[in-house]
Amino acid sequence: LSWPELPAGNRIRYIWQEWLQSHFEDYHGGYLLTLDSLTQCLSLPDNVFEHEIRLGKTLEHCVEADPEQLPFMTDSLQSVVISHALEYTENPSVLLGEVHRSLAPQGYLYALIYAPDNPWYWQGKLRLGHKRRNLPLHRYTLSRYTDWFNLLGFKVIEVETIGCPWWRGFKNFQRKSQMNKGWLSAPIAYMVKVQKKVSTMTPIRPLEEKLSVAMAGKLANISTKQLDQANN
Image: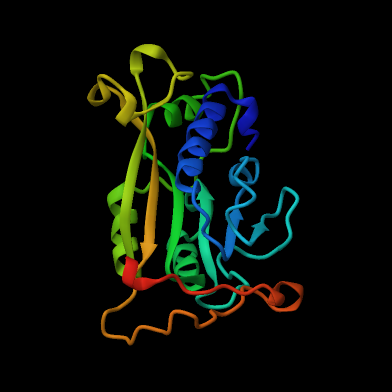
């Protein structure tokens, strides 16, 4: 997608990375799964998780697989980061289902999602910019994704909007929470944090019980421990 070569795309990448780093300040442990080309070019902290698993077809990766058939054990990942992957995969609901299956109870999904029919999309659609880019396959609303989250068993923890002040062009994207007149700006993308819920009808596992490892082979030597659910 050549995000660093797009002035507006590089601005989105910077805002997204800054937002993620603010959530990764504390040690999480366990496995972090990253997929899609934009996520792979982020500079995420390397001391937050025990192991990072990269999945992708175009860049350097440690796993090559179909995103809609993730080769990970159930309840084995602590966090997943996806950047616009839901808009470019053929079946975003299937990908979300696979992410939910692979995440450990109370694990987190961080997703960067396009705002449908936003001005930046139509700029690329009409080829008004200097750089061409691949347009998303889907233009679902945030409410559609929220419905999927709820049906799968995710709890929406936080949603932050990246806005575009129309009077400043497409090189000055900002977080709406940091704008003086955010209500005047058009939404470009949403930064979403959701958590895999644990049913209250199931017994709570012992705190020191080991969860399933993410993959067989070399990675099987790395183990994770369930978080203290009482603190949540």
